[in-house]
Image 1 (tube, rainbow, N blue to C red):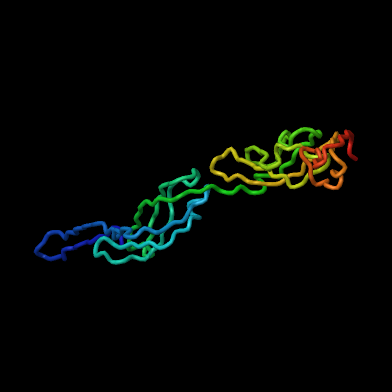
Image 2 (cartoon, rainbow, N blue to C red; image 1 turned 120 degrees about the vertical axis):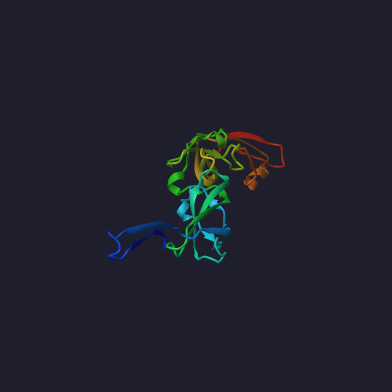
Length: 231
């Protein structure tokens, strides 16, 4: 075992010698050095993961005296896991027989990827009511999450003028200020207030109520034009 050893030699008392003498000699016994011969592998690391939570696979080490394999474990002991991109992490090998073999370190490259924010961080978005005639994306979006960021309209109807009423499942997106965090998509309900002033063309338009463009029903018979409020 490593440490300091002491040896004492005592000359036996003898009538031929006037005094007995004790000689003490010490030296240090060191642990056998080790080296990592095969680095462990590592998968993508999610931004913000604690070093001791990173999982390593495989890896081999041996002693440097006779190059025999040494049993032990590998762990990440230093490095940056917050910033997205390629990062250098320090790996430490800890021998099972720690009283006999010394630990050793090496470095490996790891890819840090964006993390997904929690529901608490994102919160629930809401859209402010707008008057009929305004485009969907003029509605102000707000959220109640704890993570700094902005909500924006991504729905393919964001530039449309929708009929009066409540419209569900309009798509919005949360973009965190922190570039190491993923965006999150969600849906909101939007209420359009006021009255719709509509023009419809041709008697056949009443039979084709599904055909609307920006709140105006369209048809194939441009013979009659009527203005008014639809209720």
